[in-house]
Length: 333
Image (cartoon, rainbow, N blue to C red; front, side, top):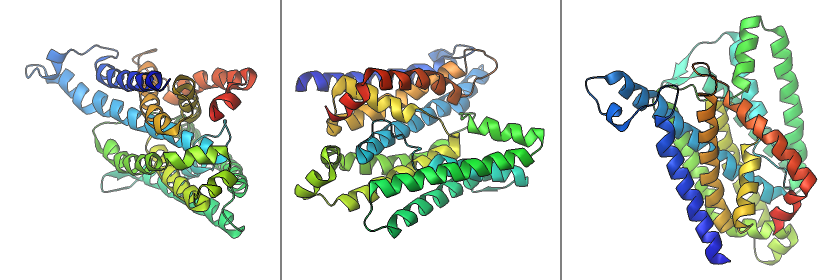
């Protein structure tokens, strides 16, 4: 059984490597290896190096971060339907982006777009509020955290609707389009913005896989095994929330990846987090790369927002989890 799980893990990593290698060459117009090094025709080379490759890497980082954060949240809440957006980080980021559009601001700092900075600030405000409300209660209970996160989701969502109502057609469309998520980027700067958050957040989650195995069994059992439950939950909360804040501020909210990828990997590998964490990381990245490739090729030269693709796949998957009972089985087995 252990050998089979390791083979499945290596298969997932191989699948991720192939998707990253193939996706930049696939689009409205195919690009060959010869084209990317052809000095006589730099147009295709520019498309590859300045648009497609950064986009594929950004999609992989976003998918990997969403997937491993979803896995951590499902372990922390012992809830198979928990997602990286459960605690209101995405709605806080959406509020920041919507406010930026409504106020008509145009600025950048260190070549980082103002809309991304505003979105990240909104995410940080949401994180701070959820932590503060949870801290007011004695301890750091998952129930208090969950209630505070749901409250923030509703609060920011209502404000976003109010901002849209007050906006003109152009600004309202910009807000809606941003809420659909996407990777319309040029150059590697967005990749460099996301990379430190993804590496740091994922590193913390990887380091806490043993503790997550015990959290799944219950906080009492984890305490009896010497785990500082409140400290572990704080580390997971801040690591995943800041990582998601950076992703959402750059790409917009992209739903369902953080719920689907961990479950698919559990069905393939099992619930042992020391194997599940790398599997979710690589599968989530590869999955979003494929979704983004579909989004830019199905109706080319136009694009479908990648959030629409993931939602079309996630809705049926969500129903399948509920009706089949696989959610309850996979998270504990």
